[in-house]
Length: 399
Image (cartoon, rainbow, N blue to C red; front, side, top):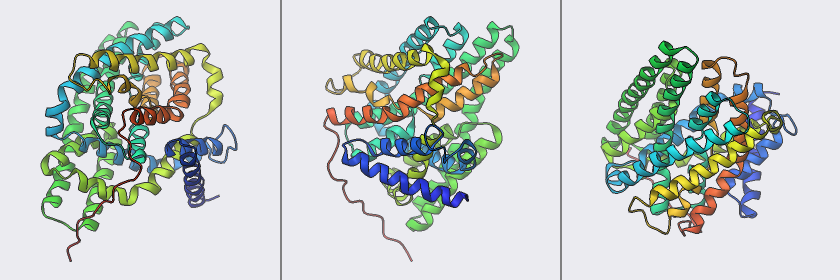
């Protein structure tokens, strides 16, 4: 079967699953993922690992679009209004999540070094799971803005903490020199990512200020996303962070977040249907039986950490009391970033033998499928969802 047929199947089956999920009152993203699960190795095995990795280009483009969209939410005016709250909640929740996940996975049999790594991996949040639910439910308001901001902050904190934790764990294994050097490497990677994101953001911003026609501007925007992703792949940087930085640059240099969103909306549905259905096909339920209690402990501990951490530390902010109990629920989705970092951890630490990635994949089965439903429930509970999507007006094209 050709890859064109695989993509056609993913599109048609995914969109049908999304429609069915919507009829049942579930987020459409859950329908995409469940249909992907049906096509994957857990059931029909139509989408094999080979097909999944061969279609990696779709994943890269979709993640780049999502990351850039998240970055555009971090306008300096929004940061001035919510920035202190985001930092307080994100860092406070991070400390609690790392502590709880480390403790519970260690108590269920994971070596302490691996439990510490799992604790940092638990900080990551799936941009796809959150952003797609926000768009699907047409949510707007303080809760939505805080959740989108926390997605960016939590992933930034997670990547920095991950590098430092790997350094610490390596030093425990008498690899101190290489381990501590990794801290500098992580910091440099973030700096390089910031530079690349700023350059591509300046590039897109230039054409936005020149009032370029929407069709041409869309081409420049996609080119910038692919440029960011390509540079990240070449030099081992994080494509998610680079595209977040690029989105931050664009929104702060032009204040045209709505324009960027309207352009991406024109092409995002087929890309995200394939991306999310493909993500579901990558889930292998059989992995649950290989990690024992540690996998379930990870799910419980991360859920406690995200929920309780956001609830507790939001008390030290001026966040509306109505939304405080639901912030953590909005951050439940987890998938690609955690799996990618887990793969790096497996390569960096000796004698892991798949223990870390096995636990993370077990968590992905739950958080990738159930997480979006929990996020949707949280947004609905604070009355920020809408029944009908407002019509978006694209800027007139110049001849």
